[in-house]
Image (tube, rainbow, N blue to C red; front, side):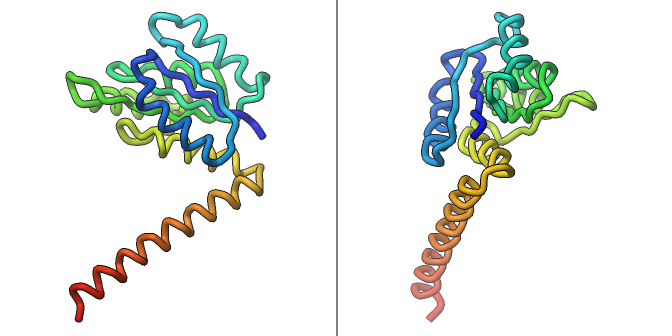
Length: 164
């Protein structure tokens, strides 16, 4: 199975990023975690993205706040799928990062999840890898079915309480 690269702009992003790590671990998806800044370590970020495919990665998750250029910097240097996690900041509550992540120029796509949406980023990365891995696809299908059953059980309890 290909690996998922999780890249964050600063180690202060780790509390959010750890949620993606936990979800990938839950699905037995291999990953690596790195800190590269689009602005402070642009050469290293570029080199990482350019060599990601040959280093066994299938998807890159890039988490950054404020200007949030990391996902775009990664996408500019690879044709692997890049999933951006816009991170909440004090100034604009992450709206600045969200807009920076989704407003990419034509030809350089970045998939984006919601602000601090590390779990969905991990799930999207797993779904991309599952295109070529039937076992992973089956694990994802089982989790979806379990989620459905939980909601239906809650619905039944609410209906029993209020709809008599």
